[in-house]
Length: 184
Image (cartoon, rainbow, N blue to C red; front, side):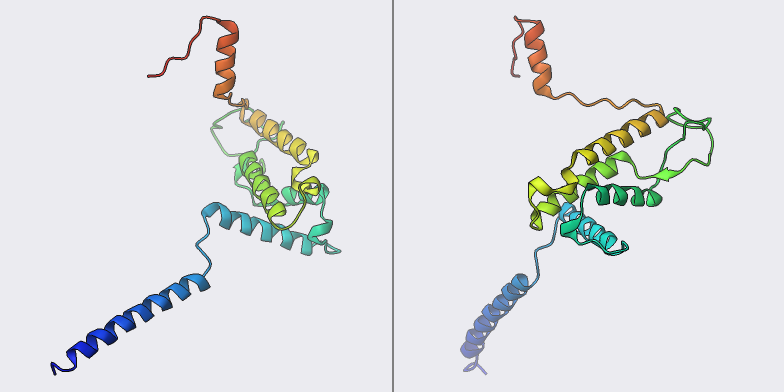
């Protein structure tokens, strides 16, 4: 019994290193866990590709343009969860309407803006050239601006772009030459 003790220890260490090697191979075989952003980007890219394939006639990703992207954004509106009051609605312009209405549910501007950002990155990661990126087109920016403005108006909350700190500092320096930045 004691004569095999050293042999068992030696075998144990070699089987432990074999187990470690097996674990390393498993790690290499499985792709690294994607971040939430990367997972969402992949899912959005696949959804856009599926949307194009479902068109009649189907559209290849390489042939897609800003019109396809705009159609895709309008298509997504049917799955939205944000109530956007129409001009004729009694609740138009009220941030917190007191009751229900028949106005449509739409995709929120922030969701569409984030979606376009992810698709814009995915397009280039999948071999598209920045110059031909349909998600970076001026038409898309105009559409997003119109959605943002109309949703803000419908809710009675004007959209105000946040000022960058650098601009505030510059404004203070321009208006007050004696202004100094003190660090605490």
